[in-house]
Amino acid sequence: MGSTPHGDNAYSFSLAGKTLLAKAVATECGTTFFNVSASTLVSKWRGDSEKLVRVLFELARLHAPSTVFLDEVDALASRRGLLGEHEASRRLQAELLVQLDGLNDLHDKHPVFLLVTSNLPWDLDEALLRRLEKRILVDLPDLEAREEIIRHHLPPAAASPPPRARVATKPALLCQLDYPQLAQETEGYSGADLRLVCKEAAMQAVRSVFSHLDSGVPDTAALQLDAVTTASVRTALARTRPCGARNAERFRAWQQQFGAS
Image 1 (cartoon, rainbow, N blue to C red):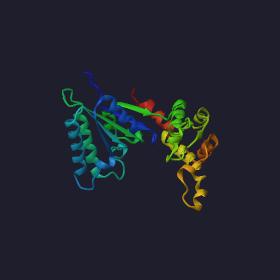
Image 2: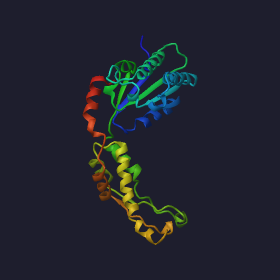
Image 3: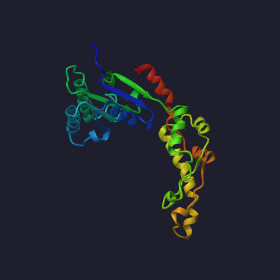
Image 4: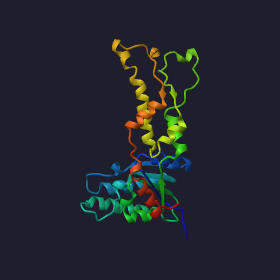
């Protein structure tokens, strides 16, 4: 008899937006959301880590329907039998597997959905992978998504505000960008990479006003920031190397072999 999957593994490049995706899933489903990082489940005291895992799932059932989001599960459930593996890690993994088995009870009136993320899915324990029935690759942003990300962080210049609205406001950051062209030039960049690029481009405009501070702190309204241009973004691109593209082919090969739609 078939059943609804109780566990998903979203895996991708580091800082690719998996956490935001998990929050969106919980919001869309209208479930209680438990956002847990691997470090919060690890304790130096013997037996505490297993207790924390047990309490987490007990709370999730108490507040069901719920979504448990376990970020960067690699730190908790790497393949067993590796050289240097600690006994505490084996006990924690065993408790996690027991709790996952408990989610598969078809008669459970307290549905709990587990969503984990991984930056190194090929290092995950096979027993855990078998219990995570859906495996989803969160790929790098495509052309359209990259353009939207750049527009979000460096929005186009808006119409000038009325005089009253300009009083005691922050210096406006003027963006004059060729968004489609920049999207073309940023292939292989993750969302986090693009955010850093946009931040660096904006900081170039901020640095241009530092010379005005030599004579004291001027009136904020008098500060004039240089426009953020396509050239300044390209300068930022030259200083920021994408971290996502290095393992792109390995992720996609793993998706072909182990992924599930």
